[in-house]
Length: 632
Image (cartoon, rainbow, N blue to C red):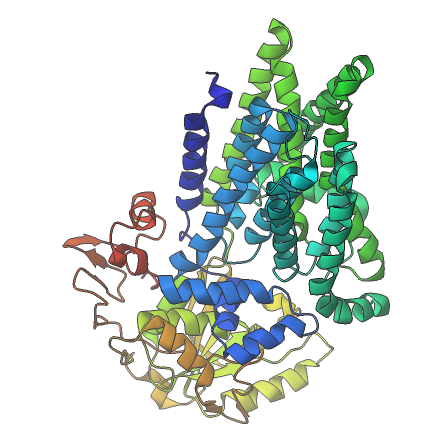
């Protein structure tokens, strides 16, 4: 048995994909969109279901799935991201199944290897958003379509209407596609891709025109509630917060992420000049394009000699359409309403790995020189991809909200005010404070003003004086501040008007402690806040959404379930929170104890701890051994 046909090879490949995705699963804090995933998931069920028809809301089904998953696994960084990890590993398996069915076992295994070590797929398999679930659903829908339109590619079916498997695969196609509509708002762009593959199966798919028409009609029904608000928004056009990207920039951004991941240094992990990085990237991209072109050229050559090989060429062209068509459609939509981010069309990345896998497979089937070139190319692409994964670990990308919140909680006093810039960061602050088990009522939480609409420095100063008046000590918690205050008016007012007591910079976050001039209370010794003992993270998260607003000068935290909800908590630096189980406990100083062993920081980024939790050694390992509690 050849290695490409071996089930053991597929299992080993999937295990490698699992290890790469879990190795740094909780190495970085949740960013604000991930916190939103839990916040929206644990809203009242009536609000969750109302999101399915809310104008502009993205991914209501994902939040419903997260609600069920976290109810079983517990609320933690690890549990939230593990759902995406599972979808990411299944996606690798589906890439193998698609490649094997369309192009052969060896091409499928190579494509699955490229998907397993893809930096961008590894990244989004470690993010608590829908960008791992959506590609998995659409890959499943495409595989079901291939099975439904050509149930036996090697042995023709004389009477397809008697094949009991056909309704099953059509049902899978309809369900997976329909679910994807409510997982991400741009999933309907998959329908033209599905039509490409339907006709690429010709003439086998000709016998299934009725089934295809019925499937398309059934797909229209679940899309109607979305179309009701999407069509007017698209026709109206305008700016929804995204910048416009020309088509060449879209192509470069997608190709860069699919090969090198999200870190701008990759594939050079060490510091290097920008020109050197760009040169290496261009060489790698040219190599990828050469592999794709070679695979298409060989398929065309075989089709010209043998008409039976025409189907393979059509499937490769359809896969090329899968790779290129979504980006083109998003560009056309952006002409009316800018709407491009690379992750929005991440579901077309598997097509790139399939086409590259076909090119490598054709090279391996050539003469000795071709086989040597194929192995060298595969090694080069693998090194580039692994370097991209390493860069994402060595140079973290997400803001260190976990560390910043821990620092504030260790040094805060009861009654301190925290000003959030941008205001949305208070939800992340509340989440990590609650994970540590601290009450919400001991701190005053307020929003910094939005100044990007042209607010004058005088108006900003007047607003800030009114906000901080009730407090003796004020914290400024800044992250992504340019979104709200591009000119830095709030920070400038703090630095020029108040007395700076402390300032710390974390990755993507700056925290400053200030005192009002002449207030003796601010000179008091740093105090601590009383923790809540034995608080359930899930109940705490829900409670934070129902807590009454805290009065802060002339403004209060209102709109409990809108942009400004979820107040935050304080901490106590000397006392340990009550252990959630007998075998583990976390101390606010950053030490974590598990079964008698102590670590100087929680093992979020420790691959061994993540693996132990992933394999389900104990319930404690899943819910507590990889905690979201902030390190010291």
